[in-house]
Length: 100
Image (cartoon, rainbow, N blue to C red; front, side):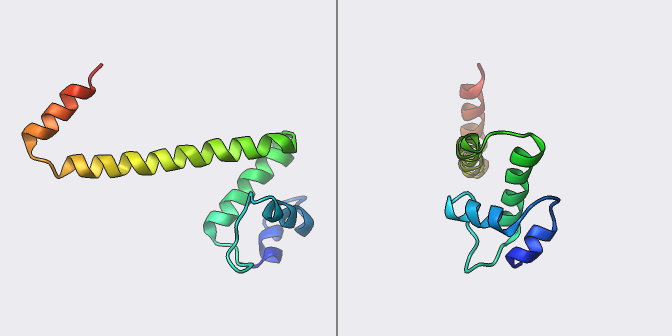
């Protein structure tokens, strides 16, 4: 999807807004093509700035925290897959160790 198509999806959004976000590294289209993940990120930034009326200097922090959450989610999924292939006694020991 090109930038004009992305901009058309959101009320009040201009190409200059999206280009600024790309320059700041908030959105990372590949060869000027916006994939679903890029459009989702534009949607998030648009919500933060236009609907929630957050200040622009808060956006990098929010994006960084969300990126960390998604990375953590991926790591936990990898751990879960590793645990799932273990023998039953090992899985039971891991579960027992997780109980607080």
